[in-house]
Image (tube, rainbow, N blue to C red):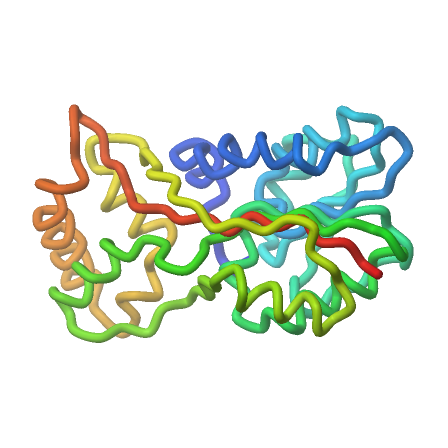
Length: 246
């Protein structure tokens, strides 16, 4: 949901951990046959397909036309729509809205929660996981050591901050937690690849040559703390929430 332009092939192959980690969140959702469920920020569609395996009617939605094209190619039997998390509409009365690793890209969190609330029927559930307070703190610290203060494209809220937004939009929150989830990114150049895929906005206004040099410098400085046994491990922190529309 972050950008108008994504490399969808790179996302689903070199960064498959994004949706693989989300498989456990589908278990929290516990989709049931016949339910209508929106997968908000569906990316290339793997978790939408998991939801559909339950017999639910799954609708995948993402802002990126590239991601939606890839999802449709991957799973032609499932409905996928282009839509912005903070401005989408679906036929009212869905049973659940699910979102994995997408809503931290949406700075208009109140707008997104409002859209979710209008889509859900009373008693409908909103099950989400996103970057939480302190997510990739080490990465951001080192980037700023190298280039100075940067404006980030993300919203990483605390439990209290997000719960307050939900309650203001008519939700109750049976469950919310913030937890550390050290995350392995794939490949010898995993950190630099991560910065290419997800961190482009941190280097806005730089030439490509300068950006490549900065990414390499950041990786060199982090290698001693975040590269172990041939693997890059990033300091992910996740906010997981199960909310119910009143």
